[in-house]
Image (cartoon, rainbow, N blue to C red; front, top):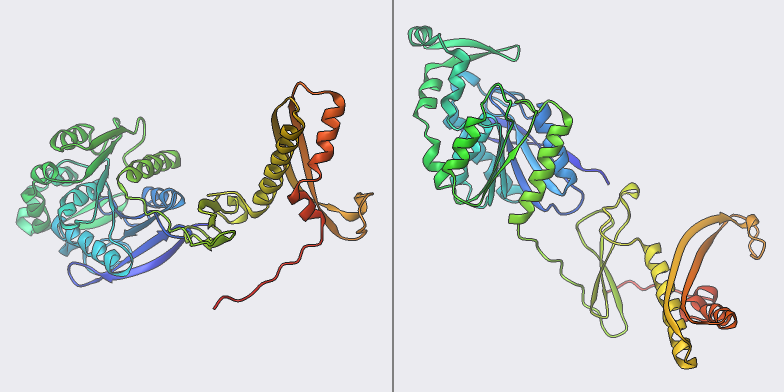
Length: 406
């Protein structure tokens, strides 16, 4: 079962409706991630989409949204500033908390990285913060309109072109940037920090990563993105970030153990695990087992499939039966290994079968017998293999009675 996405809307810091997308994995997510995109970008920028997609495939739910005045969100970009972006992030976290679960991990790309560092103190449930090519000082982006300060002071607003699009920048926006000081917030973060940065980033230099990392207290980690560009425009770079993020985040998330269903003596109880479309948790006489289907069949491959359990039962029974016989006869049997596979074949291809039409089940069983045994003893052990109880059950008349539980 592939990950899915849904559109979400919520009220931003200035009262406008903000548009977002929540990508979710099959079953219960390992945790929620809140993603903040780069300056003047949108939730649909390549890096945001790729990182969200890869994280979702690793079991996380990811919310990315358009800040006020950008993408599909309402409002005027000219009326926003860094502080309002931080407030929008907090509003997004509130939405997740109210509707789903508070974000455990905050991720920010470029100026979005600075924003999650500033917002982290207002999202107490978050246990980790990750930045990607982020500036240590939000005022870093003023280089985009360097040399136009006089024009900004005179008119109160200028228009700048970023990535082929025009954006209004107000004096209020610039003044707010210059008032920001992330140093104390980073020092008092109180959460695990992961800093990603590309040494060759031409937009936000690597010295910003050093400043963020130096200011932070442990636990903190730094990952070099080698030759990636600022926007992570190559798919492999975005996927790499997501893979490292997922592994890192898992270290700080408390895994909720699945409650084992109760089973009486001689009972096997199977219950949906809630962690995937087909995932099951099994109590077999107090032994906890998982069952699932492989990914190509829509499962999450967290355990053997039902037919693999069937083969395992036959294989275990075969090996146990040979051991019991060998011990009783005092045979020099060192070890038994049983290899099994299951297939469907056309009935007409089976000369020994009574069924002549359609398909039948074929279980192939190969037994390796180790020990100082004669040929006659080995032949007898192969005969005994067919007498194991599970083998007899499979060849006998089986009736399954099914009742509806009260």
